[in-house]
Image 1 (cartoon, rainbow, N blue to C red):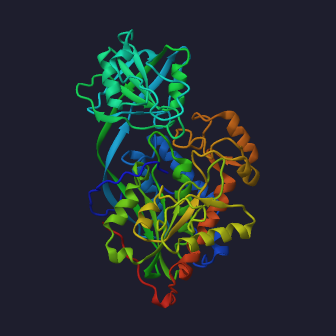
Image 2: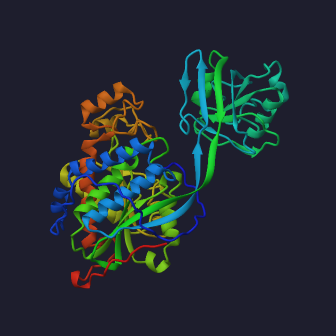
Image 3: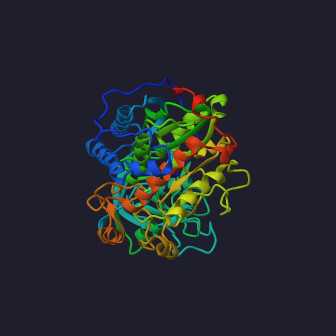
Length: 528
């Protein structure tokens, strides 16, 4: 799942089928009678889903991660294509170009106690023009910072005047706080005072504690600059000076990614049901929960439905470059002719369905939580939500609304008026006491403590997760690495139920009643 919603112009290229696929563990066992929720959920097993997660982990072990634009993503695409082909589909692969950025920036405290801060969680590099690439190691000195912060934003002027740097040691790293003047002005003042690097940090009032990207014109900038959270800045300022290392380095170019599609053999193409999950991980991580879980569950549902004669055409999708800003799904929707968009009855999205400290979130299609603006959610989405809520209610499993904000790959679909729905079990948000009472787990801890980190793997503790926390979660549930097997099992069945339900009847969503199998259309292959 991505934080970012960058809208970019994506170059269009021809569809292709990738070669040299990985071998798929276990034979496809699709049955043409898997044509009801009861039959399909029996066929879609936890073991079947876990086999795909094992394959994704193996790919990450070989290539380092499964991020778009890198070899592990290509291998993930090959694996999905091979699994679908083995099951009897004729998958297609849509290629698109995207702006690739590989971050190599670093922020470390070396003395008195070593601390390595995490990029995009604790700090981010600057977006100045120009951006200087380089590094500096030196004591960090707070410059006119205000800790705790003033009661209102922009209540301090840290680094805004040259006088703030009187007595600043030449070669030191300037620790500057967000405030009354621009980041570029603060940075150039620090450089003029002899600083070898700068750590900017947020001001600290509510809404001004997290990360931001410093931008602005910085003519002659020749020192490395990063931006940190208020918590990091507060820690570095306490008992200063502390020896800090600041490094700014990144690679930026244009690379290729792919979307994968597979369609049912039969079904009314004028009333196509789509279901998707993003296949890519973040860089330097296996992406086992985010979003190996959604991709694996959807793949197993597709495999088990391969021989089902559906009334509506079913199109499965695995999206590329979601972590770069929903780029694969945006490319697909943007390049799809309007006539083809009009044939899509609905879209189902599955992004993170096995979070270790999970809650059972159903996208709030009726906006009962009031988190979406008027007109944001297309009509029909509430009826998709109803199917998921009924599934959980019938099983006696608690569930709740989750924000329907466009944060994942359903965003491009609802933007063009296509009804959508789906599931989400939590990312960096923190489980409440009330949620712990409903679902078990650990209140006060993140739903996924390894979100966007290397420990989002099948061996989280070995990859940096908190051993005590994961011991508690494993005792409360049944963890398979960074995946909650309880959540993944029931949510795989929920996915199967929704897909097969709408494969035969979308009338509650759009009023269309399929006329029957004799009117089924042949598969329409997707190209760009």
